[in-house]
Amino acid sequence: MEAARRRQHPGAAGGPGAQLGASFLQARHGSVSADEAARTAPFHLDLWFYFTLQNWVLDFGRPIAMLDSPLEWFPLNKPSVGDYFHMAYNVITPFLLLKRLLYCL
Image (cartoon, rainbow, N blue to C red):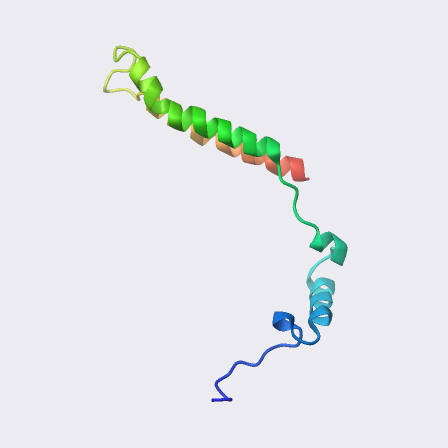
């Protein structure tokens, strides 16, 4: 039974030498200090607001816009207003994520 048990590395799972193992891995694989690694990532309230607004307008507003728009504006052989809302959602989301990426740099 003992032979089947996996060997635990020093510093794994908070055992003895945990700080030594963590600092060894940071020194070897990362260029950030322990203080920078311990900090939590900031919450981007602006992005949360943009994604929430986009979701409410484009997802929940889609059936409302489909009911409000006349059928003559969107014939059955063309994309409907809901399809345009869906396309807008797929186009706007990468730009919001790009804003997030450029904000972090």
